[in-house]
Length: 205
Image 1 (cartoon, helix red, strand yellow):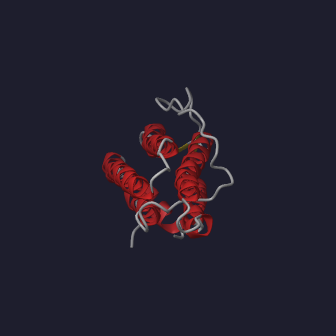
Image 2 (spheres, rainbow, N blue to C red; image 1 turned 90 degrees about the vertical axis):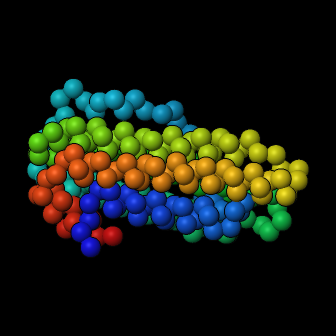
């Protein structure tokens, strides 16, 4: 299957949402880097003079960064069950907030790497990078909000907690779906066959 930016992000969204929806109130996360959340970045522009790089080199860099981002989310998602003790609401709350926090941290790293990688040598390549960063920031913003909302959940009643966690996860799923769908705009706006071919070749996932 040919890989385009929208397809890659849709795959990432499905991976993340599969973990979020697996068991309602007990899904999420690696505790390691999930306790702090950085402030959202200003992503209106990348740099005043974004460096231009060969399309193949840019695709390799992008696919490497994207693959690492995806692996971190997969790892956090797969470790959820190990982080939750059945019937222990605080551990479930920590795990859910943890996965959202991991997703945010990983996304901020991805944005940093996109900013540092320059722009592919195509028409409006710098704008493509700006648009990519804007959309990944939307994913990050949704993750940060979900993390904060999770941390605010009460844990004194398991039924209420389960219902609230399910509602919160559904809301986050809706937000991530919107972000994933928005990536189709990039494929349409920057119809570079060369870039599409290089991404298809470089992204081995």
